Length: 281
Image (cartoon, rainbow, N blue to C red; front, side, top):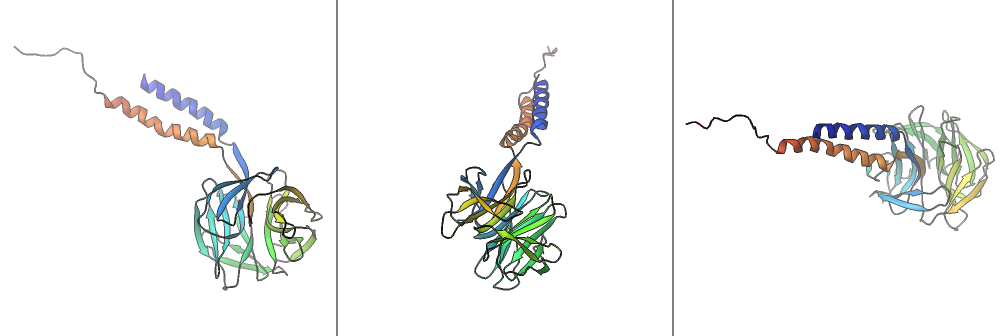
């Protein structure tokens, strides 16, 4: 009977799990001043802390959908570290320190999913790529500006965009040469960029002067920034859309983990034979 019950449970859970296996939640993530990984509501700007990374401050972030991993760049006094972050838990792992001089920092990261390339923008005016396993850096070419503070790669068009924090211009960057070309004024100082993977809308995290930090959308054709909502969290310096599994999947996995216990419980009670016994004479 127990064996039949176990099979029934496994069968039902398998059906439910297969139904929701592809149901992921799309979140907009940011890395904050207080070393927190947070999510930001795309309509209201409401922030929610996922967890504390234990590292930082961070200066850029992007998402690798191939590995389901967030990458972030930190800026210390004399070093810049490349990190991987688990979007579910905020667990953070140092990959390597990547700056070539004590003055070099990287204020933007972007990931090309099709070609599996992680890009970064150096404050020395250069577009570079990183090996995501070792952090090894490869120089691509000069951008023509030392003030790129956000990067985002559009997988649909194969175009990379960045923000020049000095001129407040949206820029396109040539991924072969590194050269940056102006699109138009955003009107905001922007510290993070990310494309919505479904709608293709470009989002940014920025502010006007010393005003409140705000979530904005950016017109990729004109560069114009439009306010979505103010964000009540200090200094978010990276932005990335990322898909994570539904919480209900974790529940099913937890149930599956206890199924073997049902089988073992059956063996805890010895079976007593009711057959004939020889009592002797």
